Image (cartoon, rainbow, N blue to C red):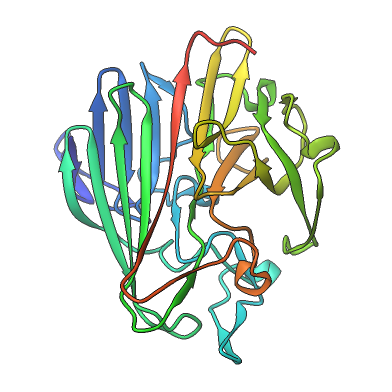
Length: 318
């Protein structure tokens, strides 16, 4: 591993990183860059083939690219929820929809816990505050595996005296080298979709259909979708979502059984890309603090972990 500070000399001048210290992992032909900011995945590649979207040194992650999410993923409606009959009010961070979005650590620098040439462990503290009166620690471990995949373990530990509610997740955008996203096929073995309102708050659930049915593979094309899926098909403890193209192989994101939801989002505003595809593993959906769907509670002193990762198969065709 080659850790960098938030600035490093390049050709006689300082190279700056808006996302802080950069942790460069290497194993065989696999390479990843993990950032101090939000313990984010800035890039993952195999043999020089980019398998996640990336961004410039002077940018923060566009569209939340690669960030980790705690103590909630996605949104809390109006930033408000009830704890023991008392209203809790989080800061509104998605002003256009009046929601609290993507947890409390999106703009936080994570401290280094441990590192090796092919792994890094980072952690950050969630301090008690308005809207979330709990002390917790989020730890994120990235590793390039012997099979040259990327494996990620996220752990939340409650250091409070009372049980703490949570949803955790991550926000990677998948790609398959230089193949345009609209030319790719996405397969997600999920049989249920959450029906959301115009503020992207789920109100009910229904079987997947049409543009939300990825079970047999769906060509991205001009697809416009921003949807949470559940009822995932787990095989050997993992659900796997595959992005593929004839002659270009496939990239897949897997998640373990602790992580029962995946959010699929096609963006048309990702810098430098006509389309970008986020495939987000989550332990619960948007607004879980109010709906209770997928919401878990950590007892005092307890920890919870979820795992996900990314694999590449250059030989697989759609």
